[in-house]
Image (tube, rainbow, N blue to C red):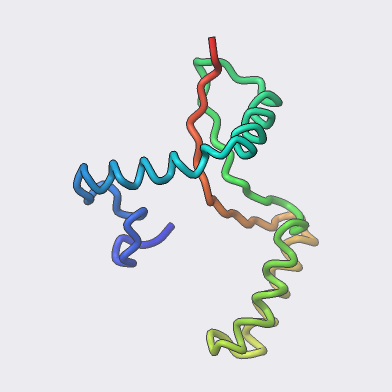
Amino acid sequence: MPSRSSGDPYGTTDKLDEALLQVMALRLEARGQPPKFKKMLDDYLETMDIDAAKSVLDMGSGTGVADFWRSGFESFRMLMPKVGAMTDQEAEAWAEALRQDSERGVFFGSSNYYSYVARRRA
């Protein structure tokens, strides 16, 4: 999560005025409106055993083994030295630690591009 000093408006929504929050909410809701996307989301939600009394959080996390995330950190291993963010040795040590976490079954990677609130239709 970004620190409150990072300048990320999504990390400090409690400090924003109501008009800006409304604009942000409308834009985020609009992203979920394309019919193809709505169909995928409806199909996904149908696989869940939820009712109106439950809340579900799905953050797209990978835990245990780095299957989905491996290509990402391997790409960053090569990219970070090229942009000057790490030395080759630092990048390799970072990636190797993630590989080892995966081998031990303790890898964790997470990304949350979208959040959803869903209610089962009556």
